[in-house]
Image 1: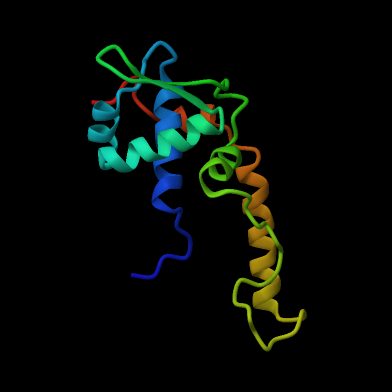
Image 2: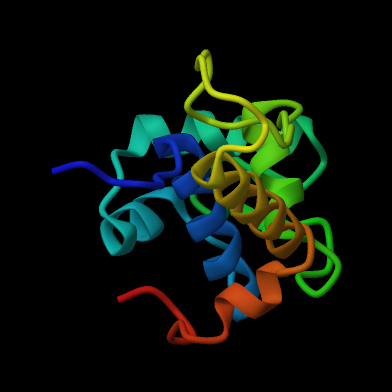
Length: 141
């Protein structure tokens, strides 16, 4: 089935994991628990957490008492920042996503898509991990 919009697997893991970690600040997210709750493979999850650690978004400790915690307050951490941490700089150009296209700037579809991309970019730069975490239970099951 065609999906109009879809985050990459690393982006989804990063957003979900940060939201879980934000939900209960005292909770130290352990890879096995979070992977079971979120349905991600542990090696993929660990790789994403390593990327977030290099970007100073989380800190991880190995061992039986280890786990992952957020370094940035959830209300200060935007979804856009998390996405850029795992994907690199995001091109938020406002060109038509149907490019290369022979159509002109006056194309109503291209204009609607540019407007939608601009709106989505602004939302992702505003929505925080604290916002995303609001609908989650306190701890993963």
